[in-house]
Length: 249
Image 1 (cartoon, rainbow, N blue to C red):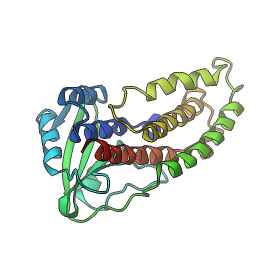
Image 2: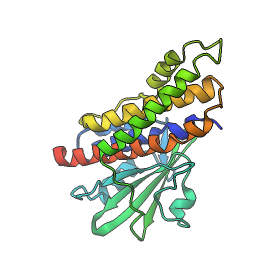
Image 3: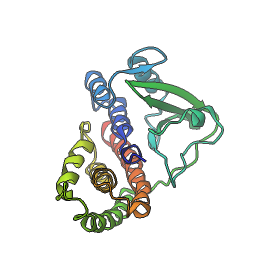
């Protein structure tokens, strides 16, 4: 299995950029440019990105006390936060989805498909989607910190397994730079940025051991970290969105 599909999420930063644009923290031009950096050409119903942004602004309840936008990630050991047997769930791919809250407890699901570019599909939900974990940034960070300590032990143990890659930590640093680009919009709370950074670091460690070192000795332990990485990304997005509401509304 190719690890990056499980631990990397271009949709994470896409969701934060969309929230920044909805609350006026970033311009349309900067947002469209960031979307392109995060997937190339975006299309929506055969049209460019602009109609998607317009529909998001039309339906978003920017005064909602809960995050108006949340990220849905899923994978082995973690079910998606959507109702099963719905059109949105059927369309859901490995990249995940964005859930947008409208007034009167109505919800919309934006599902991207990544290929040569990004094709978006929009679904309306008749009922409230399943509740996410709603962890605090501190709780998510503590879970991921524990995962980081465990992963650090594993990367040290893997350090001598390949003569052609004698410095796994250097490889981790290189991959961490990949995961960290492109950047986040202005106004992202430091707590969200910290969660994203830690998730990127652990993701780089996991990919280094499994794909770069080719060492599958620790697959059961490493695969268990995927859920913590995804959860940190989802909680970080919720924290960033909440901060935009507090600071920019």
